[in-house]
Length: 176
Image 1: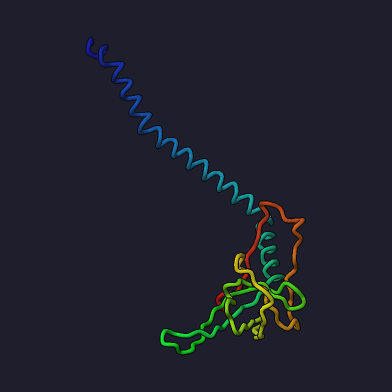
Image 2: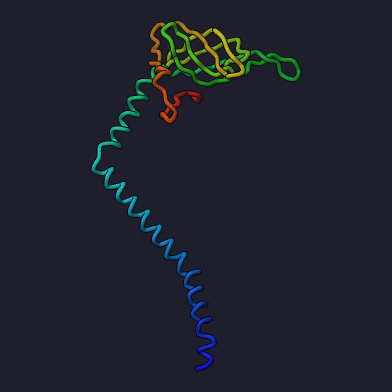
């Protein structure tokens, strides 16, 4: 009996510490899992009874449909020379978008850098020759121009309405 009195408190501390070290984390994981599962079920139920997700998807589809006619594919050709001095044509490609009803297109400066020929493919597949209006190497922006007939400029927003945290979209056609 005396041994139990001597070792009893130590044994209680050891059992308690074992429970806290081994059972405690498992219980915390189980509780955290149950809370996460409950939140996921609640969110799923709210979405199931809401039109919000479909409205968002439709808004994204509408944005893409509104922008698509202004997106163009750009092919640029540069005359260069190989190691033995033979003339070769080096090509690059990228995308851009018609931003003005005069046929101005914004693209990356590296796409048309040193190009002797710039060709634009409109959304419908029509090919047109373009000319360089200007470029800025530092910002990697270039403006080129095509005949404005049958072009559809993108609708520009106002910098006065843009706020930090607003959602933005990127559209392009870099791979034809």
